Image 1 (tube, one colour):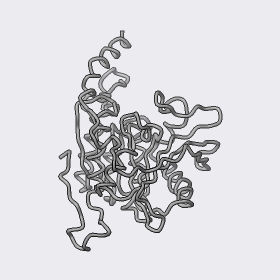
Image 2: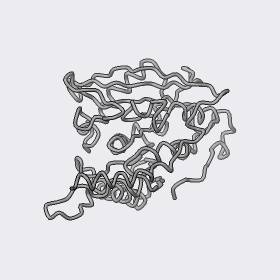
Image 3: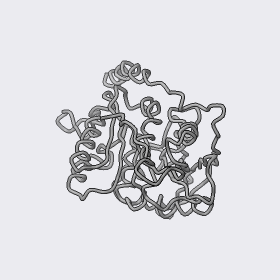
Image 4: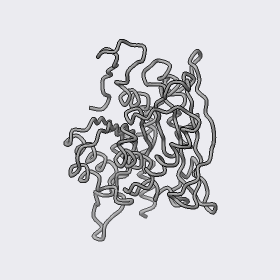
Length: 318
């Protein structure tokens, strides 16, 4: 009965996601220089022992080794780099970099790790229950930040000139990949200061519901964060011992609490609440605008060095 009811709810909720359609910035265009996607490459880890993970690198056509490029890292990389899924990041980067609506940015798309006995994440199973995704992405410690900073970045810097300025580095993801991205920036604001979160799992998978109060109790960090979620995201799907609603398992409620805490502490935060489910449709449709907001004030090197060299766009959430 409960399973049938859950399926019925998903069937009713599905049209809420269908209203979100990809725009022209998510497609290739004639005359726009195309970046190169390299991979999959393999990254072993000493932080998560006996694991490897695939990753891909997007190198924009405008990249010149003599100039340090910005960097953006996406978790669940196989989905964000794919040309036929919801985000299609290489196409979006091509278009926005060409129009100078974001800086020349190297994109990195990294999967969760797996042992030799475990399968790689796929488009139908991102890794929950089959590899190390839950441990790597949902725990609030600094282990995954160590993997990114101490293992991934040195591998990248062997071949690419990447800016050392943390304001030139962004990190993002969806669902558990979103809370993972926030945790990396939270743990290492000296390395990453821009965060993109879509349908973020700030819930009690591994204690992530603690973030709003932790944000309030901690000194403000120099972070810029964009959060997206839908009203029909998972809403307290787990029940406590008295069979009552448990807000720690309400994805949308927890995203709203994140925004409230970040706003209260004076963070540079923006957000957009849609009508979707735990789906990437809205996040994919909004990706160009979210990136414009995250990179809205980067200096154009050939512009006059004064206040006019920063392009300000109207925020899209609040």
